[in-house]
Amino acid sequence: MGKWEEVKLGDGKVTELIMGQSPPSNTYNREKIGLPFYQGKKEFGELYPTVEKWCSKPNKIAESGDVLLSVRAPVGPTNLAFEKCCIGRGLASIRPNLDLIETKFLLYYFQNFELEISSKGQGSTFKAISGKELRNLQIPLPPLPEQQRIVAKLDGLFAKIDKAIGLLEANILHTQALMGSVLDEEFGKLEKLSTKYDKLKNLTKKIGSGSTPRGGQSSYKESGISLIRSMNVHDCYFKVKNLAFIDDIQADKLKNVEIQENDVLLNITGASVARCCIVDSNYLPARVNQHVSIIRTDERILPEFMLYFLISPKMKSKLLYDSSGNATREAITKSMIEAIDVPIISLEIQQKLINKIKESFRLNNKIIETQTQKLTHLKALKSSLLDQAFKGEL
Picture 1: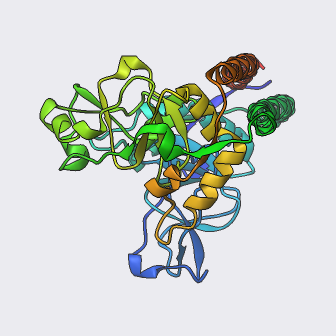
Picture 2: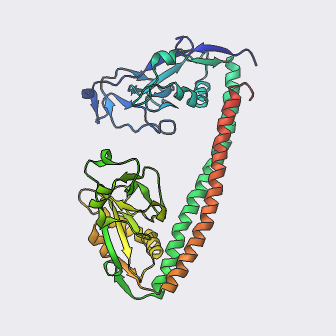
Picture 3: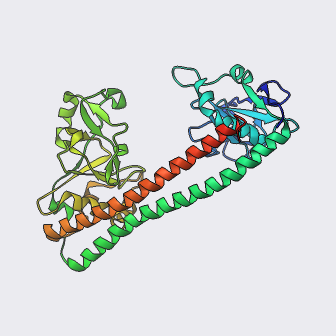
């Protein structure tokens, strides 16, 4: 195997470290003059940041094949530069001396120690790691044939793991699509059973959206009455993360949009338009902001029936199509909601349909949960293999 040495990242012999520097804003352009400009982003470890700007007078340049490291908010994610580019201050470029170190070996090293490197980030507003800290970072340097052996072994194992991950992800997407098929099939049957329809406005006690308290996010409280926003509303489930809270005085000003148990919530603006759910009573009392509409059905329509009807692919497609007609942004207006044609069927048939859909969803979710657990295991296996490689155990 040969002796493993350690060298400093900034020694200038094995690797060259280039800290990014954002060029003057007047050198940016969208006419593809100069070099594409890259800046570190949260998803950098998985995807290259979108090239939104080009730079006619770049300060710092990464060459194709350099290892790019995100050094500011967040610290740690890495990727390979696939083209010559200008790098902003959120990135560092690590250029390997190919006579001494393999590019993929260097990339795998940083992927393995991403969390450790991230922990070195400092700053109260956002984390960043300095060029001095990076230059003093010790990296392993086995003999070149050993590096090549490790890279070849990891490449082979990762190719098999990535293939398995791809198959699992495809299975999950297929299972999710089946949920839509179930809804379409069940509501398609209803069209044959029911020849009578009525407008939603005639089948509800309330249709209405709320507003954001004065001061916006700065006025939100640590606890209190829930203020539900579009980010909390997903198809068939309520996402608690980032749930906002307001006090009694703020809530009183929104008392006309107080959520009652079994109210159906529909997102009516933005990228999440047409998502729909029913909120668990544990999060009540609650209000909604202006991006969410409350649909409170009367005694002729069961709330869960309305939920499934609104998220069925045929109805969702209609809502998305109608919302795209807004001149300024995607939006579903109150009049659009009121004009929705709803099939009129007995409560007994509604309940049977609800039970059938819930059972199908339960089975599908069980499949997705199993597949997701396998995905997690495979991703953990990749981390384990990297760890073994840099302990000299692979």
